[in-house]
Amino acid sequence: MNMKPNLSKYSIHYRDMDPATADRALSSLQRRIEDFRLRLDLGKILPWIKGPDVLDFPIGTGRFYPHLLGRYNVFGYDIAGEYVRRARTRHPEIAAHFAECSFETIDASRSFDTIVTLRTLNNVGDTELAVRNVASILKPKGRWIFNYPVTGARYSELPALLSRHGLRVISECDYDFHAGTVHDGSLGQRIYARYLRLIEAGLVPYAVFGAVDRVFASRGTHLFVCEKSVS
Image 1 (spheres, rainbow, N blue to C red):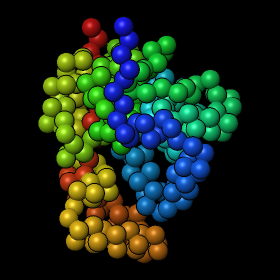
Image 2: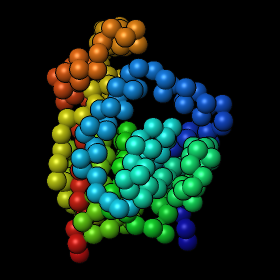
Image 3: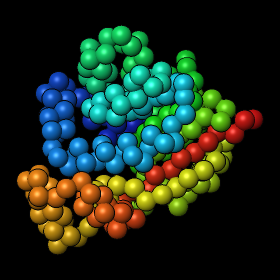
């Protein structure tokens, strides 16, 4: 008897996303802070990617996977049908490479050399199931690259959890201070909001942003690079 997946409120929000909500999310990419965060992603993640088949999961607003096109066979999964439809329209030449798929109900029709999961795993309802499902679609010696907040409920358990499903952590580093500021107190959030305003006004160059992130990133998320065992 098949059981319905335990979807978190986060997953349900994206599963049920309407076009207007997707438009608002896409418009957020125009912010300077999002450009800075993308540059951070590319600098820290691209060196770890191995091909030829690379899955961006979830694709979200579609800011990461376009930077892989022309280098790898790019695929994209997302629980949000609206994001998948837009990706297919934007890249009709690989429309068949995008599919509606969740971490709880994985599409196992393909396997991949690298899977990239950004700012998502800590919001999935069943972390164990998500890890097991991702491992099931990785090729032997394939890599899963994801980030997870140090304040996340299962952060301390991750190495053991990954190991249970044949995934060995080959790198872990500080990553993305921005994602951790939600856990700061009211004073810290006010200071950070002012910092964001300076960024949006063009008064903080990327070099300064990068330096600040390196100093405080340990309070945000960590980037994990895992490799799947051969057997």
